[in-house]
Image (cartoon, rainbow, N blue to C red):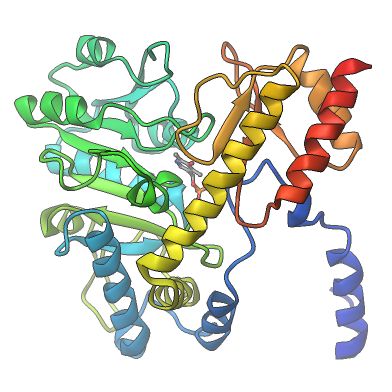
Length: 376
Ligand SMILES: *Cc1c(COP(=O)(O)O)cnc(C)c1O
């Protein structure tokens, strides 16, 4: 730090110049985040200085957080869930598995996750000293129940299913996993970080949430399809016991016990999530998901017209396109200022997320560029 102070204008000038070097959401196909809803930004600002780590000092926002948890529970089939607003999918997954491990009372256990699981589960294995066993996928990239069953043993503390995989947007057979978990008395965690705000608004009878007996916990991220501000994650447990399994004593705060992973934590994102959910309601979310799914169909149809097939028929607003020389094509697209990502081997594909910031116009421009690159 320098000795001499800079004026507010001077600092803001540096910040604005720096911010202009960031890329713009308009051409992002690679991210599961989006511009927050305007009301989320207003709520975030209003609660910026609140600290949910010391809820006795901020009973207002602590109450909002519990209301958000309740609304999320209602959305996912169980109104009286326990949980809290975390910093995102990673923290929610860590805490869900930590609760399962603590409840099982076993330290050197293992968890069985699909091969398609988010990389947060590798962090979890490391952090919690658990072996992470990866189950095979079937030809539709859903986890294979036989493979899961063969990996489960007496030291398994949790099974994980994914409702909306990060790479393909696929949904695992949660009812089958729930049967396996219930038979053996194992915790079943469903990672719906992305899909949690999508699946409730899709047609078709998706049985994946708390309505399925045997689902013990769910991760759902308001800062992805929930239109909230970063960092907003949701962790929900079917019952209070799991929350209790996470608690430590706090010696000098306004509440005697704390279940969250972080100590000091902002109430801003919880308030932002509350604001969006109240403001949009189911109607508003339905409209948004319809919009994203319409773009998804438009992109898939356009890709087929230029001879490109999706890896799987898109389930949600995630499209993985089979293009030859994927890495090179991606490179060329990036040169044209399209931000796209790839799925990992052995299922290499161009991965595109159709978020609310995307438009039909830009999908058309993208397809035109993609066609040109493939022809050259
Ligand atoms: C995004 C994602 C995560 C991680 O969430 P962060 O908010 O980035 O920590 C975990 N699981 C799935 C399925 C995801 O899509």
